Length: 221
Image (cartoon, rainbow, N blue to C red; front, side, top):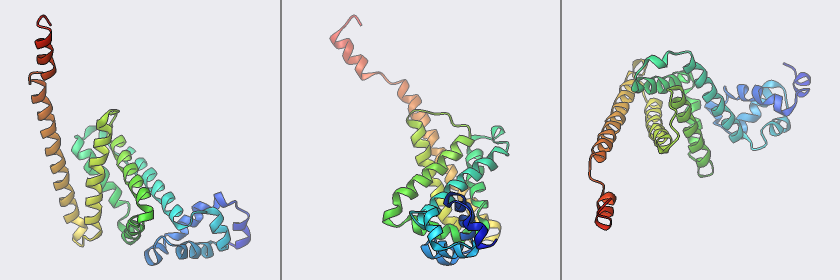
């Protein structure tokens, strides 16, 4: 597409084409200003136009990319029959789906993690991980609103990040070692959840200290 036609677009309209064009440069240049400028050249606009589209630079492009990944994941999970699955299978499927979306983009994912690990980007990285976990739990049918809402997403964030790092270095056929690792991590989580459930059950049958003390003060209670 020629430069004249591209520059007729607003900076907001250029965000999508720029992000798409960055895809082939990120594996080599990372999520950097250089990758953004190369993308601008590819679609026929000046670096100044790219800066107007992403005022915060390449990190803003990465933020947009991660949001699009979550949207795509949610759309893909909607096409699956998750309702018929057990909870462990729902979460396993969600994580596996996210990784399979990027099988041919592993270096771009790796570059993204390196960028998000920088001190100035830790907050963005944490937010992005949390948002992905939320998408997975929502697709799994989670409707919790109490402290379980937070603990579920915190636990899944830890599991997903561990599996993601394993996947980035997995050279086994069809990523068989990653899927086995994923199954083990999910099994560990299920054991913890089972233990917590049993603890809550046992605690419900224990005498209430508050009730006992109340009776000492008010024998008729």
